[in-house]
Length: 170
Image 1 (spheres, rainbow, N blue to C red):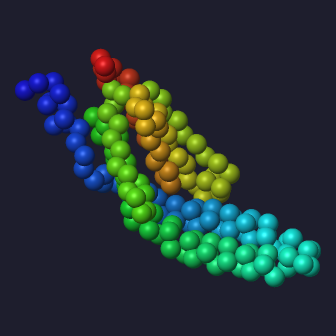
Image 2 (cartoon, rainbow, N blue to C red):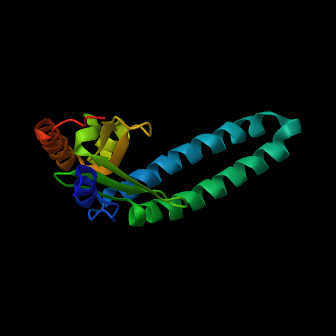
Image 3 (tube, rainbow, N blue to C red):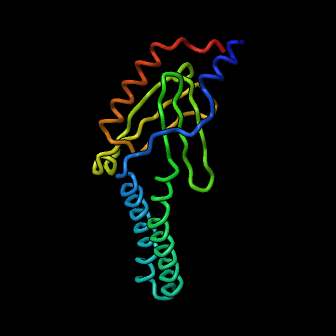
């Protein structure tokens, strides 16, 4: 067996096992509602102030509001059902996407940095994002919507596994 066959046996494309934290649905929904409110206001305020353009600006604001509310109602739950992650001693597995699903595998030997991020809204929901930067041209892999304590443990675990993994010779 060649070393490539041995590596392929250890790291293969498969569905990751872990779901995100359930609070991610509310976090994504809140993000959508904030963006919707901002877009609606950008159209509605001038619509109320500029009489000649009132009709079309308020109509556009209503369309933005309806589409944004529909997106906030549907997509966060859909994303939650699709998004998965898993970390093994050999690789990081992530599946994301709603319409177009993306499966990514990062072998431990290709990981360069591991970061955690907690924006203000993530902190409000007790969530965090783990970012794994690799030597791949595709760049980083993000696992968002994790409990912040779990994210800290994952970052520590990934750092320890990566330090113990021999580097890629390519």
